[in-house]
Image 1 (cartoon, rainbow, N blue to C red):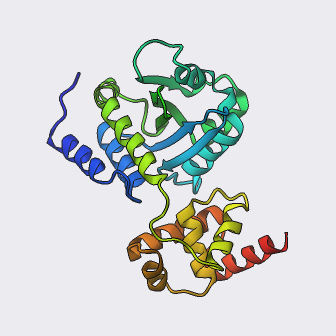
Image 2: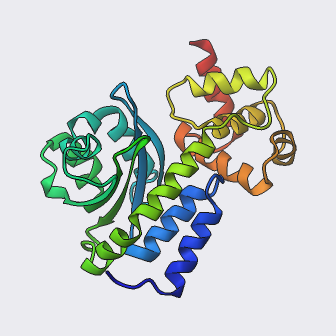
Length: 263
């Protein structure tokens, strides 16, 4: 296995510091870029009822805005049941060991719709997936595009060497994020956030919370003080919410919410 250098260790240390924090997905991607030249990443949790929960995704495509997140959501809702490799890995039928790494090329994806929407459309060349087959059954995938080329062998070996540590951090992060929010919402903000969460745009709780504050006419600073988050975090959640909702400003957000309220 290749030895990790000082910068690799620093990246892992920074990721460990961000476990449970809002910045964890971004730091996770930065770490994967450092270790393996990763273009995109995604993380999911397989539930007992056979469904798949989208956890987070990262990376930006120059020609397809929001591709990493959109493709990940499509995978969770449409294609997860067709991914035989992942289902076998999570069912523990591929061998011993609770953390395993599997490499798969785009042309090894047999389902044509899944291959087209999640790989060919954005020129994704291959994925490297780390599976945590014990509860919670979580897996995270690294992707490289045609422009970047396939994962070099040294990058694969580097990921294999730190896979147990990476998954331990992802599992802990998910557990910490699932705790109740320290600051509770109050009507009408709670009601507005609830409607946004149920509208089918895959907003996170924080994204809906910040959007609700904007709809109530609050400034970023007022929302920051209300929910106990840094001002920079409010801006980040606003940007993510706008991207998912397909709006560019508060006026667009208000028009969209008016349409939701009528249904």
